[in-house]
Each structure stands twice: as C-alpha cells, then as structure tokens.
Length: 168
Image (cartoon, rainbow, N blue to C red; front, side, top):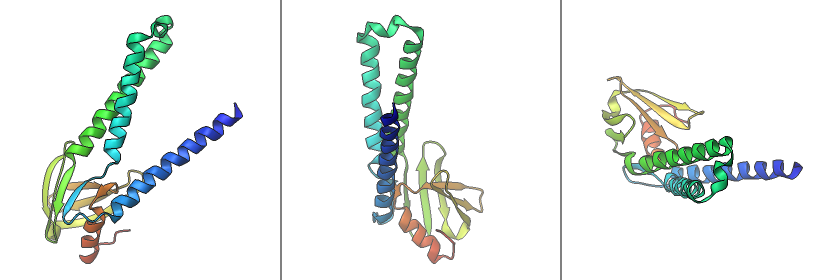
C-alpha cells in the first residue's frame, strides 16, 4: 500500500516535467509569424484515443463488466472522459492557429472564433498563472487568450515588450 503513494507521486512529477519540457520547447521555437500548437495536444489526443479504445474493447468483450453496476458505470464514464478529452485535444491541435507581425495579430480558436486586431489598439496584457495563458485586451473589447504552450508566443511577447507592455 505504501509504495503506491510513491508511484503516484513519481508519475505526477513525471507528468509535470513533461508539460514543463513542452512549455519550454514552445518558448524556444521560432515560428516567424505563426502561432500554433506543438506536438503536446496531438500526443495527448492519441494517448486518450488509445485508452478510450481499450475501454470500449473491455466493454464489448469482457462480460465481467456487467457483473456490477458500479464497474459498468465506471467503465462508461472512463470511455466518455477519455473520448471527450481526445476530441478536445485533436480540435486544439488542428484548429487553434494564428499569425502576427509587428503591426497586427490574427488568431482563431474554435471556442471563441476569429479575431483580427492591431497592436496599436492593445490596452493590456495580463498573465493568468492558473490557466498558463496571456490575456490580451483590445480597445474593441476583443480578448485573445494565448496559451504558453503555443509555439510563437515568445515572439509575440517580444513584440509586446518592444511596444512597452510589461510581460513576464
């Protein structure tokens, strides 16, 4: 029983190190005017797709799942959770995109749509630590949330610093 705690802690540290490595990789990546995800969401999508498939396979071919209601509910919940997270990760990887230059930014997400703004209209830049994203607020009321995991974010931050905004 006691060793399991250490295994879970080690796995938690490993996951934290992986996310940190991808974040640092995104920061160093030079994209020359494009904003897009690196490989992390795609890796997570395939990982979750695999586990959702395993749970579907168990549901179809393992009759012991139906022995108790709690195990069946747990298995169905895991299928839905992993399939949903796989879908979300694929959408993030393939649909979150943007371009920028010294004058403007164009950014698209399936969650908030397309946004085209001039840097001259930028009011504020805020970093939200709990979400690992930068919130860019413009005079038009447009808000762009740019994740630290997006490749190209360091180049955008350099432009913002050159324009006098305080970014970490």
